Amino acid sequence: EDAVVKETPASTSNIRVVCISDTHGDHENEALDMPEGDLLIHAGDFTSFSKLEQAVRFNEWLGEVKLSKGFQHIVVINGNHESNADWKQRTPEILSNATAFLKDDQVKVSVEGKGSLTIHGTQFYWPMQTPNPHYDLIGSDVDLLVCHGPCKGLVDGGSGCKMLRKKALELPKLQLCVSGHIHGAYGVVKEGGKTFVNAANCGSGRKITKPAIEVEVVGRKA
Image (cartoon, rainbow, N blue to C red; front, side, top):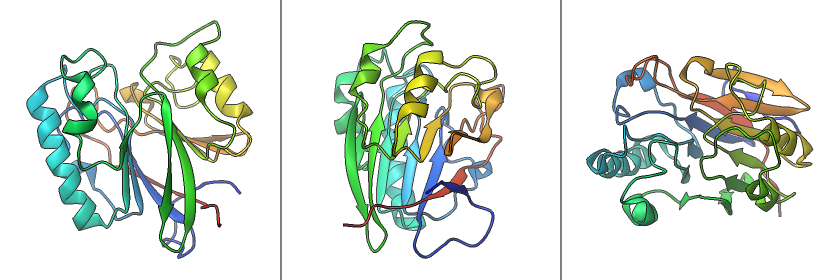
């Protein structure tokens, strides 16, 4: 079934996914307007220029919103601002309040009463014109794909990746692809029965000007 952008009161049977990205250390800004949900996805650039103190505070904030907004799971990937951090090998330890920090791997999460989802998160890659072997690691069973850079032509501001688009549209069970990186391309689009979100919350600077995006997806029942 297709993912649906939240426009009506949340369904009791669908999994509510809250998408954010490119918060750049400004995650406590009220403009983020975080709704309650089942699953929180952050698509990278949770710091500005790899500042460790911002990563530590971001983790503390994740713990706070997990409780206040009812998230059962939190999944985070890095962006270009974290990809060369001197603490990058310790990211899973630093982000202890996340269910998973994904870097070219995947996790299966279960939401009570609503089923399970398989989520793949990529490392940050610049757009490719030739095949990226790391995308071959994305399994055919993936329901949600999280990648910092967007797919070409899909909420990308003209700067997305052709190879990532090809891979995403080929995935038979994919419902939702969440990205960021291009601040001016914030929004939601559907293509091939799949929902593509650019959740970049910051505007032209590194201050949040746009709210979190909520999407409902269908969990897999056992």
